[in-house]
Length: 472
View (cartoon, rainbow, N blue to C red):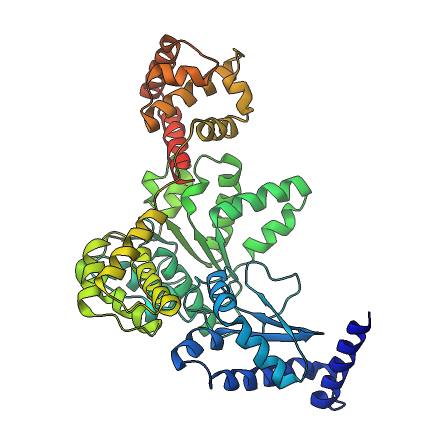
């Protein structure tokens, strides 16, 4: 109790010293001054590279008694700061203030409710926030590297951003994962914010849209939900393929789309496939998605891959030898996100271990990245759980002896998918379902194959389930 009172006294003296009778609103600016002096002091003990890459990316928030509260966007960035620089931060801030302080560092993922960040410096390691009013200096048109595989999509995106609702509406961008679709979506958002700060821009992932409408129906707040989307000047939807097969979600999205389109509001949709290949998408939605312009992004060629690596290295202020960049470009051919991730990993090796970029480091980096992108081993329980979720049936019922029609079909689908994904033998699969005979498993698989051959909707459901299980 005594310790707390002493700290409180120091805290009040600090306020008197720096605020000097001014309004409390100046407290934040006061702590900013203290932090700036601390950063300047830390520059006497740290290399300029470390100071620029790590310490200067921190935003001072406030002094909460004996805690210096700080903010950084990414958890990756925070982990490095805590492991390598927490002692020097604590000692330096304590020296400037005049009493010992601890540090609290919040990130975008764990900041408390009501936590306000003013003038946070850009973090080149973190993707943009979903807040439509949050500009990212990385995800803008100027940092999008253009090549043969994405030139058309980039040009269309620039046209839409410069003249919303008049150039191409809707704009539908599609391509495989990791090729830059979301970068373009955020670049459109950021450009429109810059030119039209009064616009109401709504950015949403299709899965979030689906969850919001489900919650709105449950909580009787559908009017608020609709107002949020139907009064938008610009609607940006990522991963729109996930509304396929969800009838109530498609119904709501159809009316939202119509209202915005008729009001001449810009709509931009992003998907991993063109509208005609989205399974179980209503024809009326498919038609509307094709009203405007379809722009695909293909796999980057060697020249584009090299340009991306060089640009990322410039952004992160790390010098990578030409032969190392060539090695990475020749090994990672299909995914821009992996190329950028390789440069980030090389930077981490340099910062944390002092290891200069080399072919050996690049080999380790690429191995790490490829391992990170390998799906988790697909277990039988995982398949049964996902099938049960799709059919709204408990997993234990699928494994049980129950023979109701819906349970039987779910069980047969689960057996088919397990065989398709894992290539387990029929007896092995049967053991997982209360020791059913291999002939029962064989019959189930044949039944599903027969149903799929005559029912395209059922076939699409099974294929979507397999895709969902593989991606989780």
